[in-house]
Length: 169
Picture 1 (cartoon, helix red, strand yellow):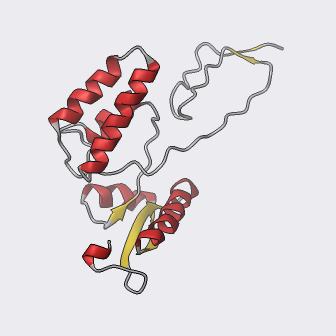
Picture 2 (cartoon, helix red, strand yellow; picture 1 turned 135 degrees about the vertical axis):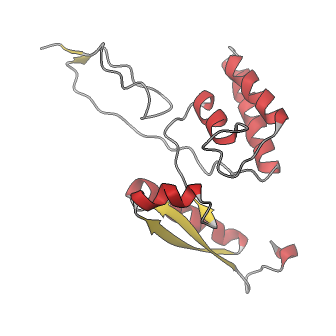
Picture 3 (cartoon, one colour; picture 1 turned 90 degrees about the vertical axis):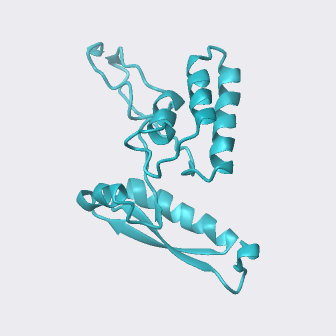
């Protein structure tokens, strides 16, 4: 940032556009706080949900913080960074990253898969692709008499098919 003329006395001013719900605003506030360390002053711009997604599709933002519900790389990476994906909002396309996404998807060894995902994320950062800011962790509570519910370790948004759930009362 200093080579671009920004320093403790000269900060870059931006707006961070988020959906106007706590689940989006909270990470936006965290991002704004972190950006201060590199001389960027962010202003939170909460946008009503009905206007947020059209605004993102029009690319009408400086920094648009969007959350994805899937925590699994098989869902997230092709969706956000796959060539031609509708949700690849900055139209990033890299054949090497596409190849790595496919490799991590078919890798059975979890440690090797993790290393491939790290390589993908490092390449995305090097290419200035839309960065993943953080991965959130959420908890799920249930009564002990609820049986057959499969909880995902990586997301609150998948695995909620309830056809195998039953109550033991």
